[in-house]
Image 1 (cartoon, helix red, strand yellow):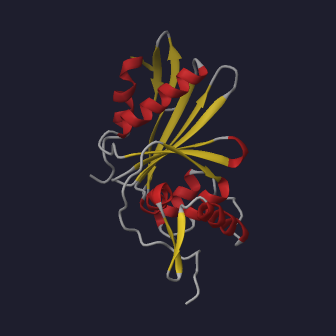
Image 2 (tube, one colour):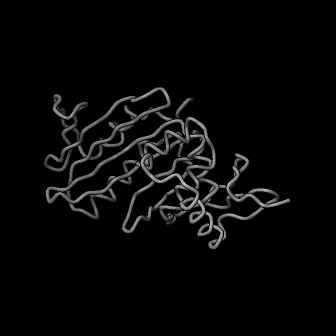
Image 3 (cartoon, helix red, strand yellow):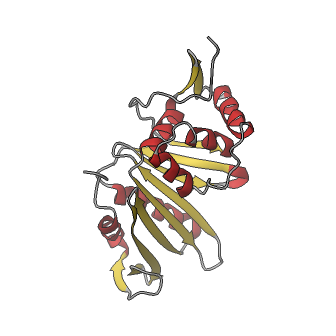
Length: 219
């Protein structure tokens, strides 16, 4: 029987790897296209891949790269994702909550972060240079705010200071947003870009994010 490496992988739960992983643009486009679920479509939009080419060349390049790295293997008549690629494929296809975070400094330098939660795994994805992405994977599903707060602190450590906004959505639509501006070691927080601000200490970041991300999605 001929192998079809573009067929979908069975969405069985797989062991969670740790650390941070690098993926190329075509690799992610391939993994995003493995399953035609509403969650997969939302993941495409959340990562900004909606305008990406959909012809066979891009996913073919993606699977070739993943196979070369041992992250996809042919099995029967289709390809099966392995390791961190399998984790991402699962999260993309089963996502329940998506949070997009935009961080910007006074010098107009910035970072983007997309958090996707499927109830069992949190994937934190950041675009880097030349179409590459970094993906951090963890199972802190009962404390997503803490995972995102750590990512914000890492951005602050790298950039020195900055403001950021976060918007969260589910399959039902946008849940809410928060806007954070630095203020003398703490944050000024508002629910809209021009809304009334309230001050919190830097240590209060997790609590503020938790109000927007109240634990495991769907729980």
